[in-house]
Length: 247
Image (cartoon, rainbow, N blue to C red):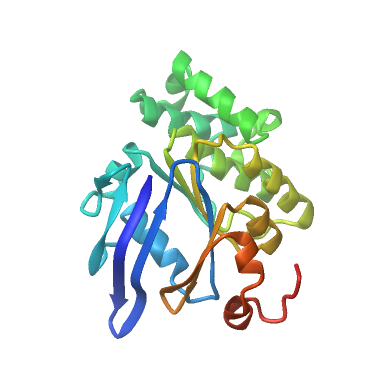
């Protein structure tokens, strides 16, 4: 469903990704681990088209999308939620979801309420709000809801575009233990045919949701395998997990 082939990217003398090759099958849930500066977010930027690789290619559902801009990749099914909120604070939760759904259905207008008048848009909004536990907050302005609800909304906005592949950059960043547990449940309840690629620092979440673990270090893939193998990897403990033992 999503594949990279030998992605290289440098900024001046700094080599950020080195020959990164990944292949995600439909419905796979893969978590990317790695220390700060390992190239994780740069890899996401290359995947969605915010950066262009120096060499290598990105393929979505069998098509080479390396030369396509962000919007074209999104229309073809590649969506992303960010480490920092990128929402419209002055709109309601429902309107944020409706705008994303309207763009997907081709019903986007300058008036957000007009978009929500479309039955197909309302159907997507209701389904997504249920999936990410946002029903109680639909009519609240984003500026009025908690940080944790905003994180849920970020995921909801991405889902409202009906992606084939969803990239998530540290979805539990900045939330407390209780909200982090809620994200475990949220991710586990997403449709199994949705392909997920997640950057995460929360080890419990990583090993709970992942079918596959990939570890980057200095821009290179140094581990790619099952969570069980990752737990026992001496290399992982040395380069990333530090004193983490038997988590």
